Image (cartoon, rainbow, N blue to C red; front, top):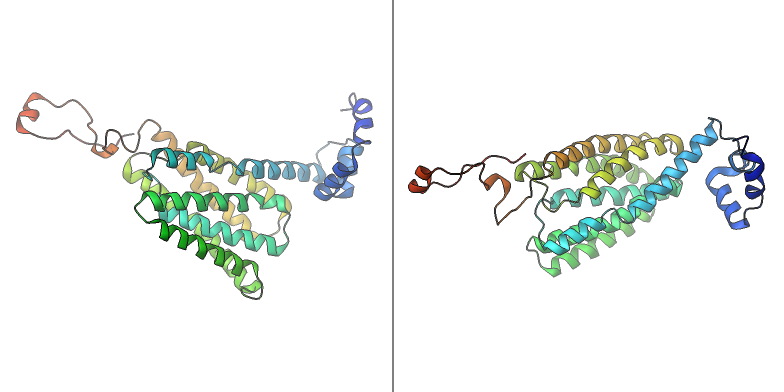
Length: 282
């Protein structure tokens, strides 16, 4: 860095005013001066904060599209195979509570911004799962109106006070963890991942790991931290399932993997009219 400092210093000292204000808001004046003006990148609390902010912004950017592949898969297949409606509902509920709690606590947006973006996309996924599971459009619209009412109540301290919201956040951590269990069970039961998006699964895994670091750096709240730790553990299980069942589609030729043949039937079997043997595809 000493070699580059004479060339970089004039640039960092002449940044446009909007960028300077953004740097101050993210890092604070002291860390901004140390990292950008003095170009001091030695290990320090300021460097850890900068890494945390960069990870947080990266997670927020990625979260804006994390559920898009899932939505596209559902729309193209017009099938909700491999997707747990209960898991989707629990996850969405947990995100909405965490969003309200973090916003009302005044936490830095970089520590929870993806929650809002993922919650909106989750609502879209849940709506499609409802639709392709045989529920009518009226049910989907009614559920959407109900969700808007819940969000309004959570954000209004006159309706849900701080004590109640804290209790809900403790429950949201449990919901967030529990939301993975139905999805893990659905994948295991069907012997395949169906329309589950690999991009979403692995992005969640890396995002939850990154969130543990950013929470330790920026948020002094064990309720938030424990939720991310538990979420990472179950995201890891789901990612392992995705790898294990990678070549096992949830439905091929109208049959689920557990209904598919594991080998060629013998002539005697065909003569007796027996169906193909079955086993869980791995």
